[in-house]
Image (cartoon, rainbow over all chains, first blue to last red; front, side):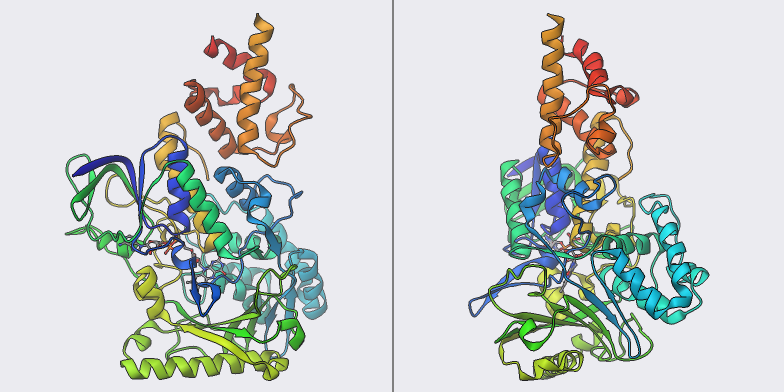
Length: 467
Length: 84
Ligand SMILES: Cc1cc2nc3c(=O)[nH]c(=O)nc-3n(C[C@H](O)[C@H](O)[C@H](O)COP(=O)(O)OP(=O)(O)OC[C@H]3O[C@@H](n4cnc5c(N)ncnc54)[C@H](O)[C@@H]3O)c2cc1C
């Protein structure tokens, strides 16, 4: 049996769902194929021992208040394109986050004034330079798709002479938004700087389920044809159509949008014209359900970027994990505590190959060790937790990420080669999501939206536009 | 006759904007002022207006004519003949 669609979308992660929604909203017949039994991809959810958990959600970026100026705010762009109200996601802003180095800490909130004051106090000689940087960022057009690569670090060195400040500012931006090691592209730096320092962190009330449920409800409303447990094994084409065979059924369409990653997509094509570098970075995350809320252990921080050495290295560690640096997320410490139980996440940079080379029994025992190490880091950061009882814990590794999302090497931020305009060497095959270059949950949603607009919808109106 | 038509087209455009910018208060729109500034619309929103016009009313707006959607008044002037 053969069925023809206007477009096939591979992967029901954030980008695939947003993309399929936009196409179907304007009358396209769309099939969305997902290998897993539930949607969400890298930011999905699961339940264990009666605890409903998000796979990895620390925070969404791009927070702005309801009455903020709307023009040029990614959050409002996303809301309007998805036809959502501000209240649909029940967004809760963060309280405060910290970048910690052995001798200095910078605290930031969703108000840039707070970070400015921190810099005035802790790096007084750099304060004017920071103001200059803010002006530069304000006037930078990070969405210009014709920009060529420039090192953010090099540009920051033109602003600051204190390299520690450069490292500290880069730290959260790299961790939440760089597929490259050590440095990031200037445009990506500006996107992340605005998303985190100028806008801010937030979480939907109820976590990622709130967002995914809303997406699913809308996908059904606009009539997207949803296929779960439908892993795409091969993409092939005749003269005019792409085809995907699933059992007895052949899905056929002029256009295919793949959100599973560039290297992963090209592997679906026999005799591929393109191959693609897979990303070097992956993470291990330990999560702990505790007996009491973080506040009761004396901790009010939302997210801590906890660096024990004086140099921060955002790179693949030579060992299983990097044990000198952790991101600690206290999910209860947003402006409102919407969780039913106390939850702390500890995330470490990890090396996929090292995890992969372990035997089954070593893998188990190393996971256990990571749990101990992670809890130890938590107690070093915030000694009050020494009194905490662990009610439930779980650890996922780069292998877990690869298993559930099929991201090669468990590379959460995808390949280092981004295809910024979404085009591939193949006609009518487009890449959206992580490997188009917009990272994180909000980034992937916007990627899906902009690729749908650019290749699926604008042709209908003969228009070219910027995202 | 012309006024009723004008009103209808104005309502058609307002209905579309209301569905796109769900959080925006549309009660005080000035027909003579640019929609972009008043309602904080961007190019993506204008594109959605154009696509909705096509989807709901089979009315096409070529890109060269986008500037004519700048204000509600100019929308009505430009679109009314297309609805005739
Ligand atoms: C542990 C963790 C924590 C994170 N924390 C945050 C955070 O706090 N804030 C934030 O903003 N971002 C966070 N991220 C990043 C964020 O989740 C991702 O950037 C985003 O979800 C990527 O979406 P995507 O649509 O590009 O890709 P994906 O989510 O990878 O979507 C691709 C989909 O395709 C499916 N698929 C793969 N292969 C096939 C195939 N052959 N056939 C069919 N389907 C297939 C996958 O199952 C998946 O559902 C985190 C990620 C992880 C893993």
